[in-house]
Length: 223
Image 1 (cartoon, rainbow, N blue to C red):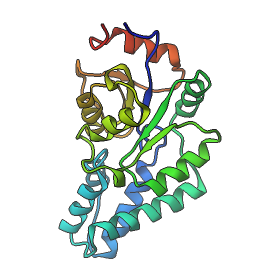
Image 2: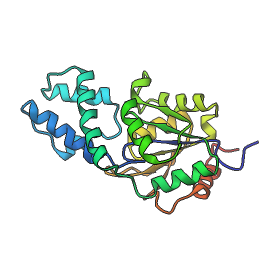
Image 3: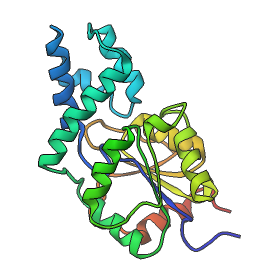
């Protein structure tokens, strides 16, 4: 027996709730250039959705002589500086978030950014949106591993197969799908390949709880 709507909605952050990918690219270019290298937009887009530890190892391979944690903290500081000037909300994201919150749908933020950056974005929302926050520095395995979404489901005390996840990247979708969540991809800077494993939307603008419920209800996971 299922409920009339999803038991929870899981949100990715970078690229889904906020369009911070240009901020990350600018920070990456600055870091690489400080160590005498070059970093292109194509290089940056290849890391979209990856865990920060994995990305840090890529920077080390490109000549950055810092530890993994130093790279993560340096990049995070620079992205947070840009967010402090302007929070780049994705079209329709905050409006959908508010509708879900007002409808009493449990919400979780599931991001591979570290906790202190997630808190800056959360504080900018303007209302207490998320009951649970899972960040990259709080899991053993980053996306595309299912652990981040499984942890969110555990903390919310819901069955992940009865929840909906919203993502913008291939690694993020792989993580959500592997957790069992009904998954929706909304591409930002990197195209997403069509797949029967998830639904693709062009934007969150104009979308509401009814749209999420329709995807959830039509999923083969619902019996």
